[in-house]
Image 1 (spheres, rainbow, N blue to C red):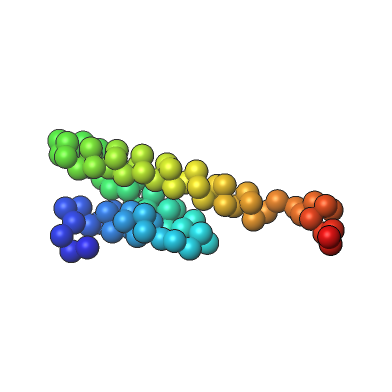
Image 2 (cartoon, helix red, strand yellow):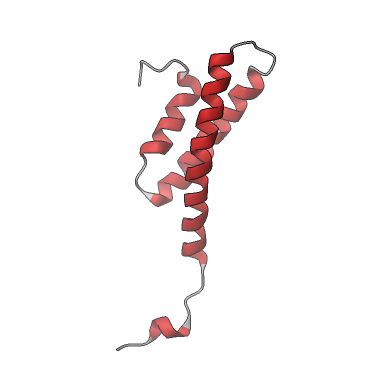
Length: 88
């Protein structure tokens, strides 16, 4: 990952993209989002359009991952219905 143009936030973003463990993915998405938003705030008045575009793209990607993590969180916290206890 040393060839990244913006490693400060791209490293946690890419780590979130490749995470396969759903439990770890939740944390990685949060970390990536914090890093990206922090960097976006830091360059708010900058004219570096390339990085801003890369951040917009990354935030779009994180949006998809966040949707998946929300689905996972919900599936883990839903109560078990009585029908799931039946033995056939």
